[in-house]
Amino acid sequence: MNRQTIALVTGANKGIGYEIAAGLGALGWSVGVGARDAERREAAVQKLRAAGADAFGVPLDVTDDASVIAAARLFEERAGRLDVLVNNAGVTGGSPQLPTTVDLAAVRRALEANVLGVIRVTNAMLPLLRRSASPRIVNMSSSVGSLTLQTAPGAETGPISAAYAPSKTFLNAVTVQYARELGETNILINAGCPGFCATDLNGFRGVRTPEQGAAIAIQLATLPDDGPTGGFFDDAGVVPW
Ligand SMILES: NC(=O)c1ccc[n+]([C@@H]2O[C@H](COP(=O)([O-])OP(=O)(O)OC[C@H]3O[C@@H](n4cnc5c(N)ncnc54)[C@H](OP(=O)(O)O)[C@@H]3O)[C@@H](O)[C@H]2O)c1
Image 1 (spheres, rainbow, N blue to C red):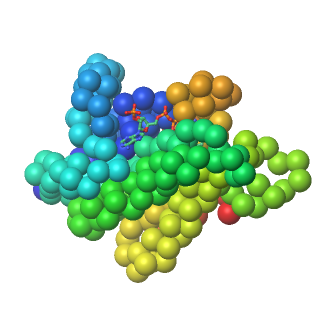
Image 2 (cartoon, helix red, strand yellow):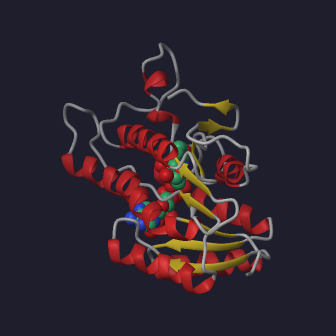
């Protein structure tokens, strides 16, 4: 069996996901660039390859069952397993997001991609991850999903939101439940917060670079076998739930 580590990064055509793919590629890994748009996917793959990464395109819309099943089949045929899954794809859902005026469609969009998408992709990939010697799952969350920080006086927690922020709270809760169920296996699953990074997601208002945001995902993707599971981390360490 080919021992080169093989990974999938969802939403890897731009932003933090692209930088996660670049970082994993720099480790000598084979990296699947999960992206829903063919042109954007191919452009990212070409750029990663030009930088020396062993990257390949994975057509993937995390909200679409058939697309996710096809992506799992691609890994089955290519390697017969998956070592690392980074659930990075995410959306804000749109606006308005204030609880009293929120557009329910925005809530649905945020949940569909940020929560159901993660569950859909994770469950489709689990049979492949179970064949890995050191499987890792990284869920890209956000400190705006931290209820502790949301209710801490003076804490910097992002805008009031009934869609995006709660979708990350939900994602954190789901991460814990996976860790509980998979506790007796060698699969480590954790949530990571990249910090406030300048990307399309926030109109490039973030203060960190996407590359800086990718660092926590790369750290959680490369955890040793005795590393944590069911946790929530950023560059500074543990993020409160
Ligand atoms: N930027 C921040 O400050 C920040 C802070 C905390 C957490 N995060 C999280 O970090 C992750 C990456 O965000 P980012 O800032 O890099 O945002 P971004 O630049 O907007 O990138 C989001 C990525 O997700 C993809 N995507 C969205 N919906 C998808 C779907 N249904 N199927 C497949 N791919 C989909 C996008 O693809 P398209 O190009 O096709 O739209 C894009 O590749 C997200 O989970 C986000 O919530 C970001």
